[in-house]
Length: 231
Image (cartoon, rainbow, N blue to C red):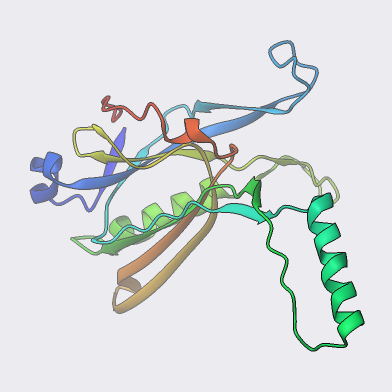
């Protein structure tokens, strides 16, 4: 089942001419280091579409910002340390206030997990509870852990659900803008605005923050096809 927000007929009938954020909830499980299918010793990720899961289709805003960040640090090798010692000795010998800067090449260190914040605008069409509050509460629920304990002291919890995030046309054609296979929903931040109809807001600026659970690599941006996914 797919639910469009907004659900106006003008967007649905011409949905191929609009860009949407597709959020498909999935059940998260981990494969342990001793699992048969994981002989590398690493903990793996497995996710399956939730039974009867509703796919959220949010109309994309006018602006979409993405950020890919890598950490490069100065290379610390024997040569650089020797040069630094020489520079320090020269300052001591000549009693000079002149500073010496040792430049070394940069070496790649690490890449941050991809994190994307999506701003969605929800407005009342004919029912503020259904048009605004319903998708927000569903996302709040999916992003939260489940409590499996039956008593106050039994604190065992289940994993929150994760999402497959894609930018797609209304007919489900994947567009290679924002595409994350395993995305944790780390923040749901609604900004409710008046006028209030029967106590419910008539407008909401909703910010959703997703973090890619997999390390970023060249493969992250490869093989993003144009297949149809909405169903």
